[in-house]
Amino acid sequence: MFTEIYEPVYLFMERGGVILYGIFGLIFILWLLVLERVVFFSFVHRSDVKKAVAEWEARSERTSWHAHQIRQDLLGKLRGNLTANMNTIKMAIGLAPLFGLLGTVTGMIEVFDVMAFLGNGSPKAMASGISKATIPTMAGMVGAITGVFAQSLLDRYIKREKIHLEDQLTFDH
Image 1: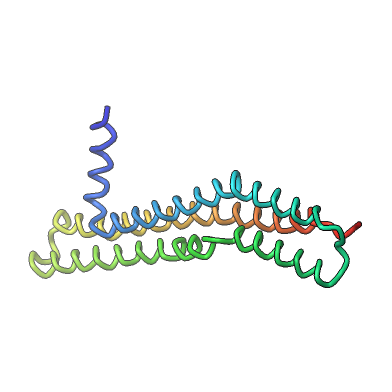
Image 2: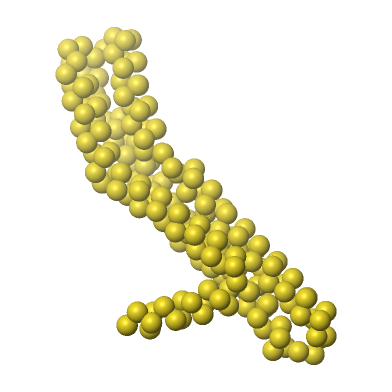
């Protein structure tokens, strides 16, 4: 069972070259950060909002300048926590295609080395370099596309949640 999964993955990684390990490491970190955000939104953020609303509702007056500053501070902390790690996620998304491009360059260098050593007439010898040029490009783009999709969903949730936070901390009293 394990070898049925392991062998194709191993062959794919071998054909893609050393850069592919870096791309997969980057994509792994990207998805860890995305999952961290999902876990944060599901568990930690909800309790933080409840605490902030309870602190705001416990105030006897909510109309003075001082009360407005406290409200802005509560909202600012919640907003800051919402957007944590989003820039790192965006950076990892941007780096994935660049790592793929690095794989393309190193693969093409291997092709040119084979051509210089054996001449132009050996397509079989060049095949390894060509796969090391194309597989990392594909992996980098696939990782970036899936990351863009996840980042888009997270950004949409954050935007909605920021509006929702404003509504929960009311001024009336």
